[in-house]
Amino acid sequence: METRELLKWSAQVKLREKSKQEGRLEHGHRMCAGCGAPTVVKMVLMATEYPVVLSNATGCLEVSTCIQEFTAWKTPWIHTAFENAAATLAGVETMYRALLKKGKMPENVKFIAFGGDGGTYDIGLQSLSGAMERGHDMLYVCYDNGAYMNTGIQRSSATPLGADTTTSPAGSANPAGKLQQRKDLTRIMADHGIYAAQASPSHWLDLMNKVKKAHSIKGAKFLNIIAPCNRGWRTATDNSIELSRLAVETCYWPLYEIEDGKLKVTVTPEEKKPVDLFFKPQGRFKHLYSPENEGVLEKIQAQIDKTWERLLKESEGPC
Amino acid sequence: MKKWTELVPGAVVLEAGSSAKFKTGSWRTFRPEWLQENCIQCLMCWLYCPDMAVKVADGKMTGFDYDYCKGCGVCAKECPGKQGKKAIIMKPEGK
Ligand code: SF4
Ligand code: SF4
Image (cartoon, rainbow over the protein chains, first blue to last red):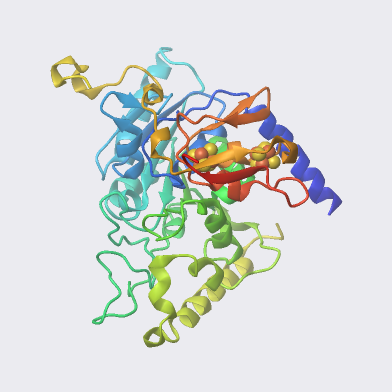
């Protein structure tokens, strides 16, 4: 307990120092009130203490942070189409290396691409896979809110089983919402032989450490960060952080990293909570509590348990 | 709003952080209020605010920037406060 308190204290001291730095994402952006994504971006950028160049796939974050002559970014930032945030940044990184050789660029510039789950799991997957395989020195950050929220809550391959979206509606024909499992993108990216990790804004120190670690490695890196969306998740505006915490504590969103093919769980919840606690506050899962969906929640819980056990088994040593 | 002929070619924005000119405070229906006596200066409100609307000076929380705060309530929910007493409470706007 004592060490825990101490750790907490030192973390806070660092936070105090951080608060004296100039932020890299400015207010006046037009993300919805209580959105998880700007907090994720802010934390990722807070962990960087060197010049960064960013690209951003089309999505909520991109359309709301740069509307005509207003930009919320205080770093070079390139708006790309849905499918090519990784390809664009790979090109910029290549140009940077060429100019560096000629001595026309400073040494310590880092590259980060941001994309939502639609732009990452689905539309941008091939360009992302290409950039990671070629080993460009860049970090790709996916802020995963589990659907195409920007265009009106359509399902993506990151949408969890059972969620109600406008293209996987729970109704009389299909009472259970989305029928398919989410794609395990973090694993897919790790299988490119790169550093890949999952993070959550609730566990901000773990998140920032992962960004720092990623940037200490030369080559391609991938970070998948959960970003609650109160509009799409059908929930109150004040609980984005609480929901991201519950996602971790229920092991719905386990925090781990994979480096050189070795997996390490970075945060083990003190007490693993039932997934119900994460689902219940969200309107997108409301139908799962009606009689015609009996057994669906149990099925989801069983899957989460299985994945978590597998992760713990694979994890190298205790965290 | 500028006309398209007045914009920089290629839709380039040359001024970093120009969104600060666009105030989002009018979106608010609830306003956070700071009860300084319950504040332990943990800075969680500052860290978790999605709108960079918590003001800090010299490493300390000093209040809210109502020009940008959208009233989401995240800060109030995450504030640990002192001995169970929150240092941020949400109040309906206009009262
Ligand atoms: S209510 Fe929301 S936007 Fe306003 S200061 Fe608190 S966290 Fe920031
Ligand atoms: S979260 Fe609450 S206790 Fe912590 S600094 Fe903010 S107002 Fe103070």
